[in-house]
Length: 549
Ligand code: NAD
Image (cartoon, rainbow, N blue to C red; front, top):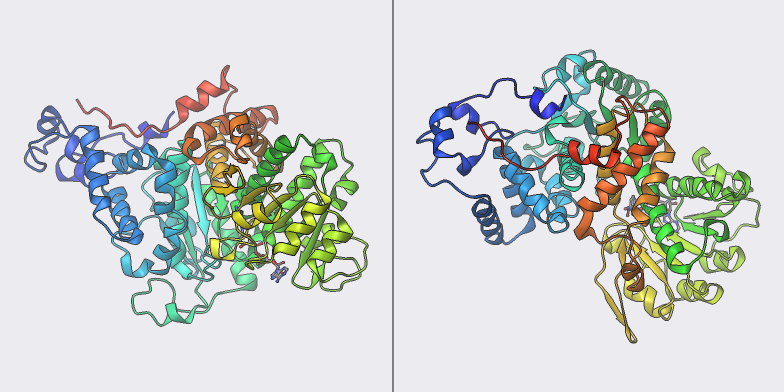
């Protein structure tokens, strides 16, 4: 049964209906509905069309001078009339994404305790240990299917924001709906409050979380264990997306739960998939294949090793033996090339430490390893300097240059630098967006390796199929499905991702492909339909008001 109907066995009337964001139609109740539902006089007499409602939203947004004010306005709209909120977002997802998610959500999180109007989602503090299932049952929907969970420790590039990090699960879940049609009523943002180590928050009288340093070690692990177990008990069909945990917790959490429950980590696996999608697009552009590639990463943290792991899988699928595939991924961190003789290599980095003499200079590493692509995940701006790009262009006809560090101010190079220093040869994509670049007689359209190509679509496939587990192959499948939607026209302009303006169409195609894999892998919780594409379309949320009479 579609939970859209299940959540609404009896419709409230009067003022209660107007206060129910999933049911409210604001100024669009017909005169007949107003009478029937006891709201005559509680709304103005004039009945709005959909176009009028949207025009009013656009007008009010245009009157605000700062994006944070637009964020606050849109949050209020979401609290008031969720259908109109999603109608707005889905009218132009590429335009609204930066307002409800990055970059504006970063500022919103920093100011969360100050701009908060009405709480959304669930806040579960470690003080409530032993009662997590009871708190989950306080949520008014009993068939939650998708939750984004954070402990607020590594919010974007902003660090430890404690419960202020709640803006991220809220914003991210809005994108699951706006970009791929996951029904909003089955989503649940959760913040696990284990304290914060950020003094400015602890000293802020308006901070709303626990005023204590972060809990670590066994007590933290036990709390996470209870939370994951309780989610399975209270919402048995729910997928958990771990979000913005610090690396020390993100990697072990994923390892502990990925084979036990339906879960994934977008920072690690979604990033990897979007990078692999970009490389697949690059290979189409260069008319090359995985088995001819060697990658050198600048940065060997969770993003870098996550990408390297999925690249390895892509190469294996292309016929490269596993050992050989790992050797095609090299990494350099703050202490130089990852080589076996170093004694500071973490376990998760070990598969990508190889036998080689130590090198500390990145250009020297390029000359020694001869990569076909470099991927910047170092968080440090400008490290892909002119010498780096020139060295890559000397050894490659079309060097793959991916400066993935976010935000724009941290990017290892700009699009303009990459095209200019490579004399127009670079195949470029970045973590943050860059405008088109004119170089000589060409205009290049740089791609953005935005995780939004992957996670909403994957979420839609998981939701629709009631998948039992999330596997790496699903990410690989999603990446391939993104890449195959890049048109020749896109490639001709240098673009290796589909345009973000068509994200909903892209996502539904990706969701269909991932759903096929879920059925093929026997991981679905529902029967295989005859037409999986039509099934996904039918399950996708449409921001239409219901008719009450
Ligand atoms: P991290 O802190 O885990 O890793 C950073 C790595 O960079 C470490 O290995 C560190 O040693 C290395 N490093 C730092 N300074 C360096 C230097 N001067 N030279 C060489 N290496 C250096 O961070 P992470 O979570 O892996 O994220 C890395 C970056 O990737 C961030 O900027 C993040 O915004 C970005 N990212 C982008 C996307 C995306 O665009 N889709 C997704 C996730 C992460």
